[in-house]
Length: 222
Ligand SMILES: [Zn+2]
Image (tube, rainbow, N blue to C red; front, top):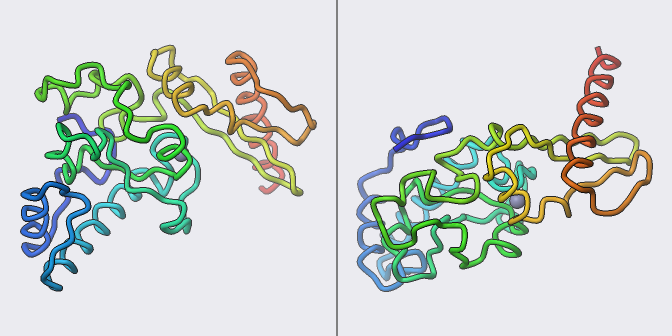
């Protein structure tokens, strides 16, 4: 399994009680929603879920795995425990606690665009392909490095903001991710008060502008 981030998924560890709580949950009809009756088991399952979320946040530097929006200090009302192969579909339930199938996403990306869809999975039946980044049309939060495809640049100063995305790769995953999560809706520039949905070329242009701007701010700060 290729792993695009640190700390490595392979280095993730749980206490024995947490591992057992997950095994019990996986034996139920609704593994992720499973509520153990024993308070100690319930606490162990909750603790395991918390550790999984924190691990994924650490791997993505407290940013959404899809749009790179900030999740630092965002808390549970803005942060979702994202199941890449959706946990609501019976065939994907066995992967409810698979670390490679989990990530941290913002509510916008997860609830507004991702939901229970599986259209981004190339082969939804051959389980041997589930742990292969090539089987996903978008940038996979664990197998693909987001910054190899896109760059999100954000500058805020004096109550004005620029948010832009730069395509750093011609790989179709960059465009698919940009379209699937409607990243053009996140793009904004109040420095020159131009509004409207930019084209991909304009998006790249904006990205360059933001880079220049960020560099100038850095020089001024120095
Ligand atoms: Zn997001």
